[in-house]
Length: 334
Ligand SMILES: NC(=O)c1ccc[n+]([C@@H]2O[C@H](COP(=O)([O-])OP(=O)(O)OC[C@H]3O[C@@H](n4cnc5c(N)ncnc54)[C@H](OP(=O)(O)O)[C@@H]3O)[C@@H](O)[C@H]2O)c1
Image (cartoon, rainbow, N blue to C red; front, side, top):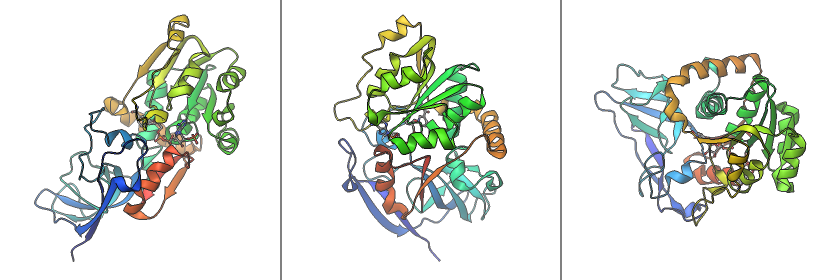
């Protein structure tokens, strides 16, 4: 029997914060696999702030999603029909399947997923790009030494919560910046951070200085904007600023605002380095082995913010990231 595919397509290029009208929904019969292809029933999708930049016309680190195309998303699903020898029916696989119930694939970029290591959402979080970004961004780019102070922004989110925990595992002091007292409590009480800064309470500079009196050795920045500017004034001599992302800027209508306080890099002989995790694929196997080991021993905790409602709930799930509704990894269940 033919499967019915539900898809979420980009209808307009959003200006500022996306609205539900920027997306359209289509139901149509799922395609039949030809020789060398297979059909995946997608179960879980990773919801990422970067999706917002993929909706803009200009190329960022990947080409934009075309107007009328299925919205790009990484996900996990099960092979339900196959004419591909490497991907039999029943296999659980991960890949960039898009915001749709069924995805046709020729296997490119698709990898089997070992559910004995964790449920599907964990493979989109700690064992997926979030964990790899935290691991490689902090340890390879930030290079913290034991005893040093690591500050991370969007600390209660997916990448941030893992980054702070990895800093602790590596003998550093971890200070997180997050929005609101509940998220700060979560960092301190559930994840074992040494300090938490509530940026919504204001006075970020003073709060960071109080928690890092000898200066910030590594700043892992997910947010940009005012928070980056404030932390730049608190750097230690020789600090490393890791630019992981700038979630405060992704919906800016007049372009990204740069840091006013960048001369602190000169004053503190500091560096600021941007990175894209997909450039570091050679490091993935070793990083994944370490991440899954830490999950197994309980040193690393994964939190999932699961959004239900299927393909039609995609805008709600995405907008939740910009409103800070999530704690941990946002996953859309289809
Ligand atoms: N470089 C790479 O290769 C790479 C790969 C993956 C992800 N990333 C980046 O990593 C960052 C985190 O991604 P994620 O998937 O883990 O998302 P996330 O942190 O789980 O969710 C985004 C969080 O950002 C915070 N936020 C939203 N708007 C904000 C604002 N205006 N000011 C301050 N905080 C704001 C919210 O927390 P609050 O409640 O605390 O505000 C929200 O929970 C993003 O910048 C993303 O682009 C980079």
